[in-house]
Length: 129
Image 1: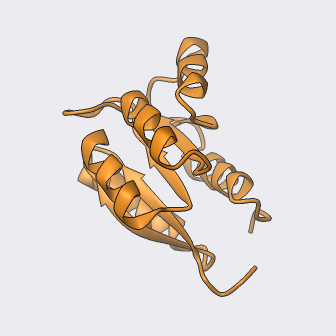
Image 2: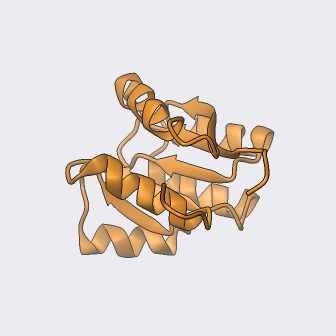
């Protein structure tokens, strides 16, 4: 890997969840949180402005949810991988998420950190630390 860390955008309406995700992500020296957004509408602006290498989206947020935001992000940055990080995982949601351009759906409830870190590593084509 080069010396420039991958830029990750965190999108979640919970400031507590955004802080926790930032702590987990930035333990990996190859990753840097470039910004946080409290909803999908802000996320779209951040993607345009910062061109992150990966976007982590919550599903349920005010103003614009994660699925709708993903559809817009896919148009703006079609090669940027997206992870949906949500409490509400189902086969139907996974199908809708993939149709919106999201590569994987990770539950906030099950071994959260390990599964999310593994998904990020995979999407950024890096070995898991």
